[in-house]
Amino acid sequence: MNKIEVVYEIYEIRSDSWRVLEEVNPEGSIDTHQRGVSVKGNTYFVAYRNGLVQEVFLLCFDFTKE
Image 1 (tube, rainbow, N blue to C red):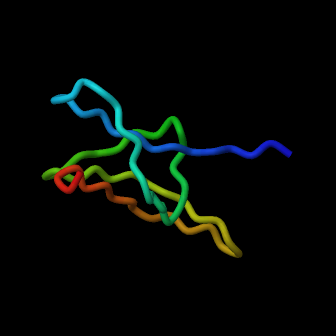
Image 2 (cartoon, rainbow, N blue to C red):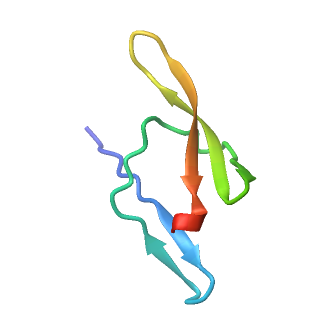
């Protein structure tokens, strides 16, 4: 069986390079075609978590702390 590995990176303008974000443990999954919405330094995505009932929630990434 093929295993999919997801890597999160952030682009740093000062160094003109990409950096891998360590210890990213999202609570759910985000569709690859989905866009986020940025408000006051945070970017929000609609995320999904599957279980007995599928949950839909907002997942936030705070760029001001990165």
